[in-house]
Length: 523
View (tube, helix red, strand yellow):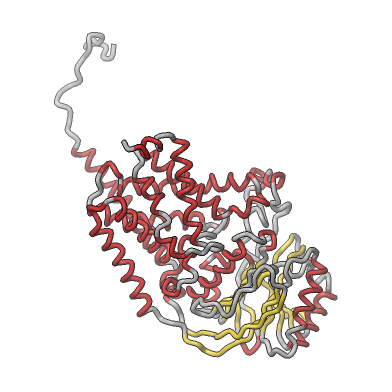
């Protein structure tokens, strides 16, 4: 055993190395945004898991790496959730244990992997990674924040692939490249199948670039984003938003978007605020989409609601947020996990959920679909809105609790993926930055409004027509990955049955020891 292998015989050292290896992919996301790093970031983790002496140890390597990945991806939660961030990372990190076990199953260092196993690994390991991302994408586990494919939000060929198979297809291909890269490093004798995997990935990307339908430009709308900046108190914030919106008079905008929690009072309880927004709508000639975070007067509970206000007041279009942020807006299993409120800034009272997505109408007949906060991380929500006929996607967000962290940039980058997946432009408006607007291909329209900006910005947004393959066929990449895993289970199960059937039968009755007697076997 070499010196490195001997050093890793310590379980604590090995787990520490696994956690560090699992944290490496986070550098591909904003803020560092080293998109190219995603294609080799998993190599150390893969090499560690394949060197595990047993399958159980490989599973521990998967758990350790998953812990490191989740902690690094959500490290900006530490000031609010404190030690509970570590608990969540430890729980969710276990989802990668089966993936690392499969790494060793196909690529075990001691077993000298064959060409067949290598080709199987290029298909199974990315599929298993997608299985992990599918499970952790459940809203109750935090949602699809940090999906590996989302690191490619600024790469135009990757955005083209997203229009074919969504962010899931990107994750699959990124993991496949990492597996091939690990083989090139660790198993020189099997470079041919590894290179074949890289060539297949490049061919897939090239085919998508050449043949995937492109959105057709069909008109234009003029959208304004109002970002007040960091202001304490709902009244002062409203005053600043009102002041910034007045600057839009005469700019011929069709829709004005305020950020999440831009209004801190129920408009039915505060008709004076509704009238002030209506005055702004009349002066600018555009409806104003606000977001109310308050206890409703017509039903019990606190809701986060996107409300459209026109020249005559609220139009009646209202969307209540459906997918709430765990611990930030509600506590899952509060009777069990309610102690989180005592160690951090977890929700003291659960907000209520909406029941359905809706479309609203802006100027010149433009239909848009609103989403609130981390709902923009869910590909199925934007896909459903476009399937219902949305011409424009609008996300209202607030990351003011995480200023100067990587969170605002990570959140803003998601709009590029949702735009590319659906072939519809995307407006991401926040209270404090980063705000961003993307065209139907996922390209940014102008610079982002950063965390230091307090302004109203106007964007000429090209509208698009047509249906992307992702909107038409949905999460087919996920379904294909699950079929691969089911097929693997059937093959492994059949192999186990055959081994039992072909096991040699005993040659004779068991021998008796001196302590046994024919009358009382075992004595």
